[in-house]
Length: 96
Image (cartoon, rainbow, N blue to C red; front, side, top):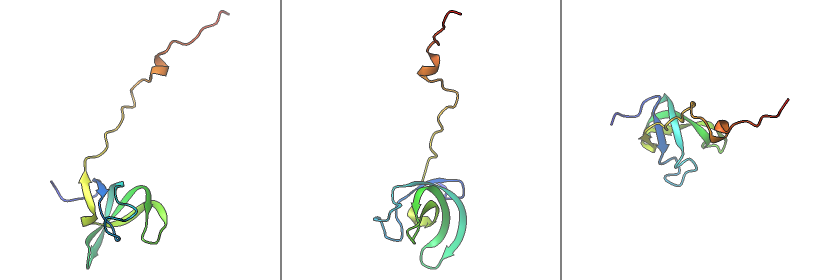
């Protein structure tokens, strides 16, 4: 498998607090490379819902060491052309 790169989807498997971090288990999209950290190596900006920063702020982006991410397959998009059962039920008509 190719190393993580921008645009990949990943699961956060660890964080600054190890495997007990608040973001562990969350699915994210890798946005961009932020740089190299002397201890943690490559640092990526990731995007997702309800991510908690090292300062306790809740938002949609955080920085993660590459070793804290496990690359996953992107979620399958639901078909926008699917017709719900409600839409296939004939409409009631009233005499004019």
